[in-house]
Picture 1 (spheres, helix red, strand yellow):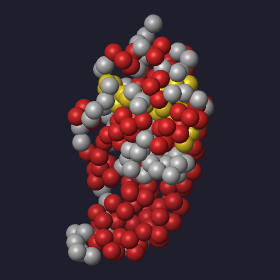
Picture 2 (tube, one colour):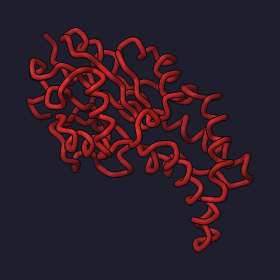
Picture 3 (cartoon, helix red, strand yellow):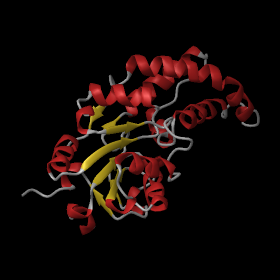
Picture 4 (cartoon, one colour):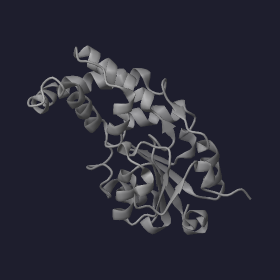
Length: 234
């Protein structure tokens, strides 16, 4: 990884993504989506397909899942059907996700150690995710991660989501830090594009979702295989 990430004298704060960066939530997504689809009398979607849909917020995830199951039998009408079903799908998805939130997910190895090391270096932490805040905060609490963060912002906290830079700029504003001294830690091109546009340095984990593509092809300042690698042992 690039040496920029080891010099924490450069940083006042870090903004950390949630899904695919701190917690492997693919099981939660797949379970909630398939319960939703079952309620709508639609076929299920495989976790491997869900993985490529994750990262752009729940609205995108639900619409993508609907298209995925509708298109094979009605490619010309799938878009219209997905739009017609969306409101009912969102209501069922929200119901099911809140019921199973965290039950089919796990904290990635090295996350707790990495967050502890960052805090020990005096780096202030905020969690910024495209996941709705009503899903994000209970998940962080269930996994014992909420105590690390001064601020938690979900995808519904601001007018636009990552990869738009607005959420990062607003998070820096809330922290009272400048983007150049605020490190973005994520798992996908969404995080990197938002960071670049906001003026934040960015490090990506190698194990996340990134829409089914290799993260190492993304423009970032460095890559790690574990958050524990962010801060070297003393």
